[in-house]
Length: 476
Image (cartoon, rainbow, N blue to C red; front, side):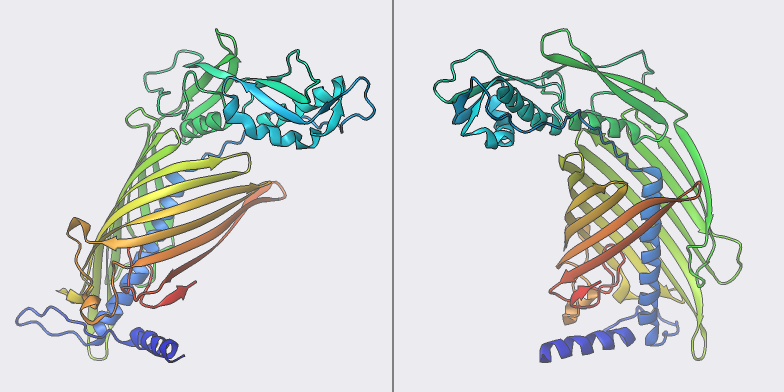
């Protein structure tokens, strides 16, 4: 109990004072008040939070998710017929054939056939049940059959004929910018699966100016099918202008921005955008500017991304005896790689790994605050699960982040008095719900999210993503 009390007391104290703060004092300059560094840290945390929100919105607008869900054919099957004559007792089912070892799970669908006396209709039902189980997993060209056999030994033998990909090609001549090699996570000779086709379509359609569809056609060889891609591209360059009120009153409420987006800049189903913005429409002793560069490259079930962003701001705040100018700047670089681990008709699970490097500093009246000069780096590993519940999309994320000394990262000033560290581990999680609906003929969308984080160590006041973290334990 005493430990918890001490931590709460330390947290409340930290809201009003920053112990051990040092300010760089060039000779001949006035020393800012002791409260100035703490105030600057609070202002900077808010600016970082707004910048992170802008970055998320930019990525959603310019690298949108393209969710494709194809439904395999299926049928509702009857129960096993009773009193069939003639019939044969079946004690065991066996699946043979090319690649049959990879499909033994399909026999789980006919566990209820063991111990039954099956005739012609019962055996046909067994075949259809196994076939449906295989179709449900996306293997739409793989077939199951029963060959002539002796059933007196109590074993029903089924044969698997896997449907393989004969070729992947464009159905009509396309421009030199059309690319197949990095869109599909599968290739010639592999067993055809709808999940691979969905991924290929998503990689094509993620490019906003591209339209794509895929047909399955008979291949030249037996048991093969060709994937024939219909692909068209519109204008690959887009310019967007924006005006919003997402800024703060102290640094400029109204923000104007311009975004240049290039679809497939290297003709590899890739994406690039650049964004610049600043405060507008208001005049005063304040302002902020921001810039972003982002690139995304797909590779089958993999995704590679790079992001750079920076921002600067300044504002005046009246102190007891004077007006102080607070300013700050930050630049961030992130490299990330993702891998889709699993997908079916209703769920996706993705593994993400991200490395980051961040520089930031704050100043009061042009004097750098040494204790708030940050140069941090680290990595983050996370899992994302996306679930489709009818028209509702549910996203859940869990991540582990840890700071390192890479890229000449500096120890946090708080480490000198054990007030916090930027190199401790932190667990984070969030869940979000996206629900489209309509009012009359107007489409609307409801979105809500909940985020939480936890660490057993004291962390620095601002972490790599700009959230306030000057506390122990849990934050929601």
